[in-house]
Amino acid sequence: MRRENQSSMSKFIILGLPFWPEQQSMFLTLFLGMYLTTVLGNLLIILLIRLDSHLHTPMYFFLSHLAFTDISFSSVTVPKMLMNKHTKYKSIPYAGSITQTYFFIFFAALDSFLITSMAYDRYVAICHPLHYTTIMSQSVCAMLVAGSWLITCACALLHTLLLAQLSFCADHTVPHFFCDLDALLKLSCSDTSLNQLLIFIVGIATIVLPFLGILVSYGHIGATIVRAPSTQGIGKALSTCGSHLSVVTLYYGTIIGLYFLPSSNNTNDNNIIASLMYTVVTPMLNPFIYSLRNKDMKGALKKLLSKKTYSSKKYLPFF
Image 1 (spheres, one colour):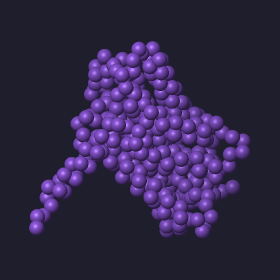
Image 2: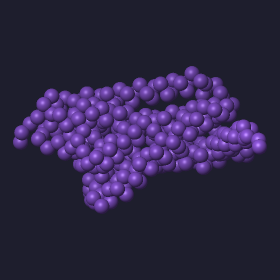
Image 3: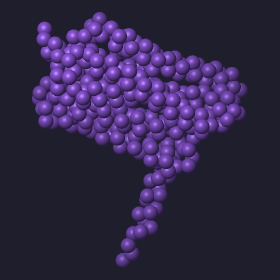
Image 4: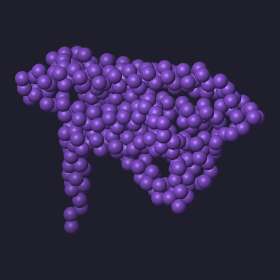
């Protein structure tokens, strides 16, 4: 089979979603609506946290970064997917594919670390309420976020640097709706054992260990609630736990089911659908989860809407 290295190769062909041609326009509209909902919903979360001083707490500090990450995560794949469906032009330049892979890994891992930071915040708030302001100080929160960015940046950079060293075969067709790392490795004619080892190590560091940390945090939270003579003192801290657990279930459930519990009858189409869940659906649902199940967020939204209504009435012309 003819071999081509990265310097002579110009592009990959992305097959896209496994739908019939007559369904393309329907799904184009659907995913466009989901993407716009993701962007607008998460921007609303950032705006509410920015404007309402009652939300200037560590939990909502992490949530604002999670909202920004969700917007970026969806923007890595969805606009290109929509453009390919609309124009029927399914190619992506080699440099573009490497860039997309980098940012996909980066924001996927960053999501994981931010969700874990939020779980740690809930653990401190419920299990160590008297020391909460000391432990979750502004500097500690900033350090957790900065550390998450640095670690995920390094992980994504390692993956893409190794990917850039590979040679690719004559077939440049990617059977996915974006440049998935695993799909690209299957097209390579080079030895990918080092890449696969790095996937395993980084997967443990960015997915498995954070998920175990979340389980431990909520295990301590559950034990504290059981031992507490009254739940009145921790009621406010618990108000965000349900929302956070919903996000954890959606995000980690899909990823673990896709990458860590492979089924013998899994097809590529099933993997693509599963990928859609955590790249498109989960970022879209997060704003609804935090706005509908969170009293603080609902209160901030009502306050913002009441201000807008008051302002509009104030400047109504008199006849």
